[in-house]
Every structure is written in structure tokens, then in C-alpha cells.
Image 1 (tube, rainbow, N blue to C red):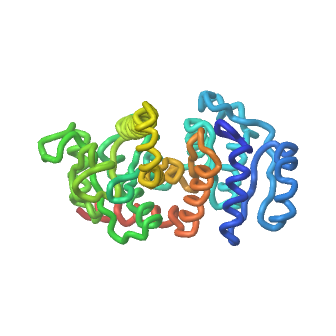
Image 2: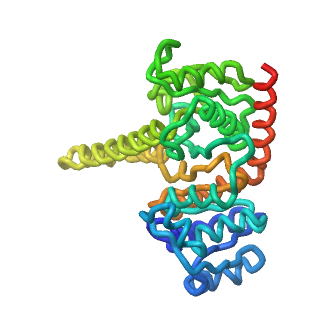
Image 3: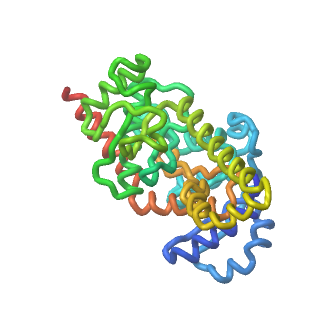
Length: 333
């Protein structure tokens, strides 16, 4: 029921995923009357693979997280996360209020032992295809130890999603030199250097999309990560608008645009944000995927597919085991 468009987007996306993956089963959480009406044909087509779980409330997109946590105990968001806790669902996918989703997920599912705070990880396009980055807004400030924990968790996500045995991990900084950065980043670098991770050192902001060296995972705190993410999104929108404006100036530029259309389409498809939609809340004892609130059906479908992969690869268990091993290694040093 969440996001800017609710069932108008989440239902078509869900049905598309059911058609692509015969092993997938979905529990649609929300107003039963609304969902029954919109899913009438689908309930027959996918009678053994789709069900409805009623929830009488909806968390609004700008509702304060603590208010939602206290007053919306029967919201579609809360009920969906409860299903994960109870083992009736392997993952929760939501396009709803990010703050409320994080607060509710942390309250209901609790943290993996040894993890202080959850983090948000997602995929971003780059000249090498794409890279993964965390934290993208789960924590406005993080200690060196927490950045180290983010790296340990993020490595397992990248290994699972990308089938990379030894992901290349970089720490976001204002320069690549050892003397650059604040004390928090320098302390985190020392922890990463001593770890078993494939740590390649500091990387600068241009490494997110166009660095000279491939980085599979970029680690930073949520304040910097979220600012970087929104900056990239804004730059992409500006480029698209400027290109459209340039090709629309007169008949000659319109003809040039028509001739360049195949190339422009390839470019657009390669950086289409809908194909990178879906951010994982990691550090929790349950799998929660956050879709962009303004996602269309294709974008929400991408978020569901991310959940499918992380369930199949048993990411939560692998993070727990990796963390236990990492903490044991630190204790012996």
C-alpha cells in the first residue's frame, strides 16, 4: 500500500515477477477489499502462489517514524515485517516511508548480534557496469567500528548478488592519500587494513561512477552516502533534461536527435535508475528491501527480484557467519 502510487504499481510488478519465477510466492499485505478487487483474476491464475494478508492501516509517506511505530501497529508495513519475523515470509519489500520502515524493521526484527546499527546498501551505475555502496542514509553519523561492520556486511551482499568471491572494497574519502580524511575515516581504514576483506584503500567520489579503478563496494557513513546518492540522481536528471533541450531547439537538432536515437536509447537504458531500484536494510535479523517511493512497476519489479536473489543466496545467515568470524579474528589480534 506504500509509495507514491500504492497497488497501482506494486500489483503489476508483483504479477510480472510471479510470471517470471515459478518458484516465487507472494503475500500481498494491505486493505483486503482493495486488493481483492484489483487481484480478482490473479487470485485464480496464481491461486497457490499469491495470497492476501489484511492490514487496516497505512503509514503515510511523510509520517514521523516514531509516530508510525507507536500508532500504526496494523499498518501494511508493520504486518509485512511481522510476517518475516514469524517465518511466514522470507523477505519484506516496501516502497513506503523509509524512516518508518527502518524504525519498524529494527524494532520488530532486532539486530544481528555484533552489529550496532543497520545500514542501507544499493547498486549504482558506473563505467565498469555498476558498484555497490553503503550506507545510503540509515545513519547520519557512524564510528570507525560501525564503518568496519558495514564493510563486512556489504561484502556478503556483493558476493551473493554479483557472484564475486573477493569483492574489491574501498573507503570513501576526500583523497586517496593516507594523510587525507577525518579521524573517523582514518581509524576505519586501519580496521579494514587488518581485516580479511579485499580492501583496496581510499577512493574518491568520482570512483562511484567513473573512477580509474573498479570498486565493487564503497563504504561511507549515511550522511555522506545519501548526499552522494541524491547528487548522482540530480546530475542524471540534469543531463537528460539538457539533452532533450539541445535536441529540441530547431528542425536541424531534431533531425540530429532522430539520427542519434538508437545511441541515446542505449545510453538511457544503461543508466536507467529503475534497473537499480531496491536497497537492502542489512544488519537486521530478517530481510527487508526498500523500493524508491516514486518507483513505477518496472522499478518495483527490480526490488522484488533483488529480494528473490538475497533469499536464494541466504544473505542474512552469511552475514551472521562472516561477522562472527570477523569478530573472532579481531579478538585474537
